[in-house]
Image 1: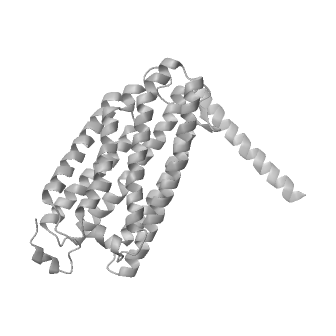
Image 2: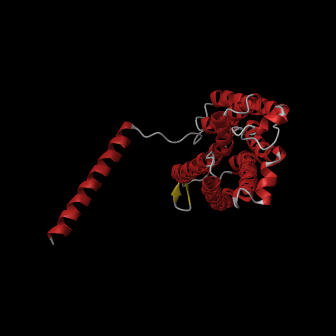
Image 3: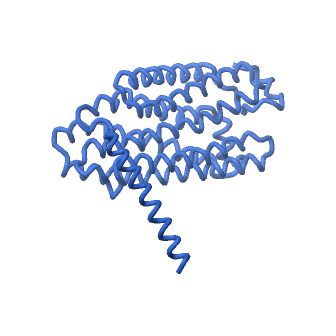
Length: 303
């Protein structure tokens, strides 16, 4: 632990004496779950699992960098890097949840659709929203590394807007999962429906843990960074570990225990692959559609 006297240095960002044992503990915990996720991705040949592995890896790196900062507290760029990584790493876990529902729809529902969305597009749509929120949160987190208090507040508000929108999309996604669960009971083969229940409950739990963490960040950053609440949270390291690090660790571990690769077996376990003829026909259809659209625009301009 650094000498408290060193905090008189203007280049030091810490507002408390960070705990080295806590940083070591979470670096090890996140490191272990990262290794297990990488192994399981290879073991089950579940390609989408690299996304959650990336989130776990970013969490691990963030705590390794935190350890570096504890021993060299004036390394501002390293401090900024670990701070940003802690803020954005959960976005990867969120994206994994989004893609997982698409895989469940493809695996369980006869028409491979939900609410008019094709199974593959469910994940792509929500992951696209997640990427947008990722960029917004990254921009906000980067701005908070400024030395100017007004600029810091601007960055915090941008980041808060990003996590608030993220939570809104999570709520919309939860509604979609509830609809899926109802259709699962009516339309899916009973044996298959029973086999995916543990994974579906794991998905619910993951979304709940991510939401818990998002709400904490909204509460923390919604106001001015000099407010009593923001100051209390920023001056006590324990809040970050309880309301951010711990939920994200559990969100990773539950998918180690109930890994999708164990569930998705047999027909429809993977996305359907198009034959060469189907790919050719798809390209031809797109080409003809463009030609028709072009012809239509020329006709309208002539008229």
